[in-house]
Structures are given as C-alpha cells and as structure tokens.
Image (cartoon, rainbow, N blue to C red):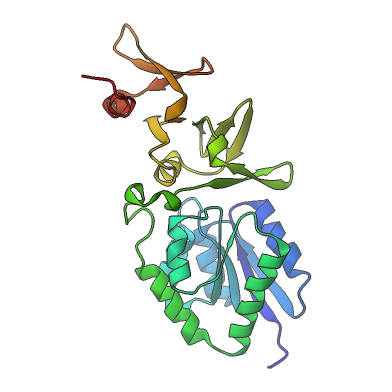
Length: 267
C-alpha cells in the first residue's frame, strides 16, 4: 500500500540514544516503531521476526557489533539501514564509499531529518536492491580493526568523543584528554579535574587514538605522552609513570620497552 507507514526498528545499547531516535521519529509522519533492541543478538532476532522497513543500527555494541548484525542477517535480507556511531573517523570511510547514510553521535535534528528523508525516499521508490548492494560494499571494506588503524593517517584518528551525562550528550575534544583508565566495561576519560564515563573498551580506544600523542601503558591505562614527566622503577622491578600533575600510574612489564622507546630512554 502506498500510504502504509514505514516500519522502524531502533537498535542501540544505550537507553538515552534509543530514546533520542524515538523522539525524533515521533515528529515524522507515517512512521511506526515496531520495536527496539539493546544488543546485536536481540537486533538480529527483531529484524528477522518483525521485518522492519528501516533500522537505525548502532555500530559499537558489546558482543555483536552493528556490522556483525548485517553479516549474520545477510545483506540481502537487511532492511534499509542507517548506521549510528560515536566515532567520526577511519571506520566511517567504508560507509562513505558505499554511499550509505550514517549518524555520528551527537547528531542534531537537521542531520537526522536528512538521513531519514533519504531513507524514506529509497524505501518508497522500492530501491532495496541498491541498498543491499551498498550494504555488501560496506562488508567488503576493511574495518578499522582489520586494516591496521594504527598506520592510518592523522586525520583517521578520533578528534572528539561523545559522552552522555545527566541525560545530555556532550562532546569531549580528544586534545583535552590527559589519560584514560578502565572501569569494568567502561572507560574513564580524565580531562583536567573532570572525569567522563563512556562505554568503550581500552583496546578500541587504543586503536582509535593517535599513537603520536597517546600510548597504552597498562591493560587499564592509556596516557598522553606529552604529559609523562618521570618513569619510576620500583624495588620489585615494577614501573610507574608520573604525569606532570603528580599522578602515578602503573606500567605493565610487557609495555615498558615500548614506553621507553617512545620517551627516548636509551637502553
């Protein structure tokens, strides 16, 4: 039916992010939200059972990522897809090359409307074959972890990170980050006397931060190289770095030699 509403599924592991998309969709005419999912497994099940026309799909989710969802469902069986991500960097080049739309958190109302309008047009024109070809192109592009993001040019690295705080989303410029520590499934971004909590792994952050400015010194710590003041060696052979603020952080033995090399310490 020509006037049938567009059936939409919203997938994001963050409640606030799901609510943001739902609120924006409420402003659009002819939209039916058929469900939400907070992880990749639930997303796959919902896509197969509810058969939505359009899915807003978070790229970074614990367990199965957004691209994992596309791979498992199969590009040929996927609805029209708008990817949502907190990272505006190297991994998004695949989406750009494939002419797929995506939203970078925190996105504004105008950008959302633009992406949704384009998706609606493609759906109404029944151009799903084109959309599936684009999804296949995305899957064929090397992802950030497959293509060696550590050797990517400077512009490929994160310049800002979206942080949810008190029901709002703010942007933290990477140049303001002094160091990062792990807190279970979260990471704490330390900027001066402020701490921002994000749901991201240290491995992912290590890959997406410019190695000329940051180094991982421990499984639970990444520091800005320019703020390292002193490398301390303990009696038991353990090491610590002291930042210019006076803060000390542990250095794992497996990462000590790389740190010394980066600091220009002679053997």
